[in-house]
Amino acid sequence: MSDAATTTDTAGSGDPVKDRRHFARMVAIWLVLSLILDPLFYFLVGPHVPPGVMTSTAEENQFDFNVLMVIALPVLLGVWTYLGYSMVTWRASRAGATEPVGGEVARTHRGVQVWWIIITSFIVLCLAVFGTYEIIETNGAGGGEGPNPIWTPTGAHILPVQVIAQQWSFTYRYPTYGGFESSTLMVPVDTSIAFHVTSLDVIHSFWAYQLSIKADANPQVDNVAFTTTNHTGSVTVRCSELCGIWHGAMFNYGQVVSKSAFQSWATATEKATAANTKLLPPFAWTYTPDANGADGGYYPAADPYSPSEVYGAKQPAS
Amino acid sequence: MSFRGRLSTFLVLLAIAVALVVYSVATFLLPQSGVVDFTSAQPAGTPVNLTVQTVGSIGYGAHPTWVTYMVQAPGGQWLHDTTWKVPAHTRINVTVKQFDSGSPLRNQQWGRIQGVLGNVEVLNGKPISVYDSYSANGVGHTFAVPALGITVPLVGVDPNATNICSVAPCGSDSVSNTIKFSFVTPGPGEFRWQCFVPCAVGYLFGNGGAMSNSNYMGGFLDVTA
Image (cartoon, chains in turn brown, yellow):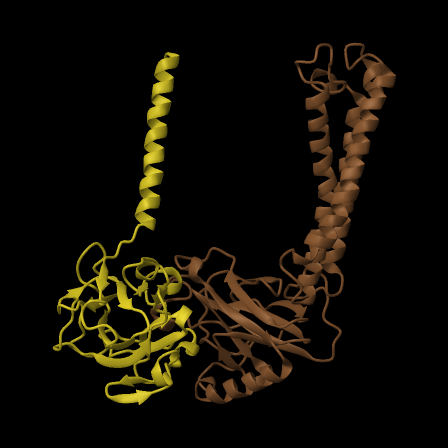
């Protein structure tokens, strides 16, 4: 601000002391507002920010959102403070009250430009480092995703759940319970889960909102995402990749239940579905539908790359 | 061209573009299906009988080769409409006349009968709870209402039969399977139903064409109070 006054005689009041006082007032207002609103947001609103704390990844995501908001809030307050102060102090109806660094003056004001670049670059770079770390750290918000996950849970017992997307529904296979398939997602609390996400047709995306898991479902790809459940509750699963006419209706629900309830459900479902499980293809991480299966070619018949494997043919272990 | 001329041309072209966009969106979004009302056909609280048929090719209209569902209105006539209005908290007795051939399911999970009373369907008089889609003629289509957990496989007919129906509505002179099942409607709401067999022959993944238009292999159960 003082630079403005010294670099141009037409800017501000022309009195460096007066301009410095304006700047100090704005900083003081901004600082007080930030010091009040940031903690208020973090402690009062923060715990309620989506996606909640049902899983380790959800907790990490919530923390990340809160950190971003705590950083963004002072920026927002800075803009609003400047705007409000300018409207009061340098409004047109006040004769002789020229804004010190606005309009034409700002274009050649080296101090404003340099500090703008330094501050915004610093914030953005810090966020990039923070975001990258949060994604790749163990139990991080990224869920360790990918065919070759960048991290795996350290717990001794990891429950694998295969998510099979198809137009237009998700189904779930439980390989440690005889490979039965269910239309409902059920997982136990206080357990590390490895979601193995794949597709039988086009590209879908498995988004279990409360679990904070979002993983692409690609045909013939075993996309892995980890999480650890912390609390029981309901889960909404949606497809988040535009996949055809009924994409908007491609959702279902699931539950995080107690370990004993899960055990009971899994055992009962394994028994109830045994007749159909025998007919399912052997469990594999990915499946290749029959090239001509179900009257709907996986690829057009004329496609030279059309695979001839029968749906369910076991793929090499990944 | 003068400024006024250029402006007029621009505005006319803009109006045409906007009209095309609005028309396309409206055509896609607006229901292409009529609603068949089953709520007033019988006294409240009594079961509703819903009779439908699945046909390999509708045989007429804009897409004569497309596979489709047909529904029999309370008056007895067959209609090409896939939105069916049924009363809430009521038993629906469904009869499906399946006139199409079949093949193995892309996901055998849909061969398990779920969400209907007793978790069974009656196939040509015989109750079954699971159908092996790799056996016999496979599965032609499914009737599924995902939000209600309903999945019923509709077993295919012999593809070598000489009397396969190719023009809807089909009659008793064509080879068919009869599938019966019942379910109870929940409270009011709109529930999507669809076929889970990628049965749109000639389309990539089998899910284009008839599977991607709302008046053929999918529709809505309009459950009203």
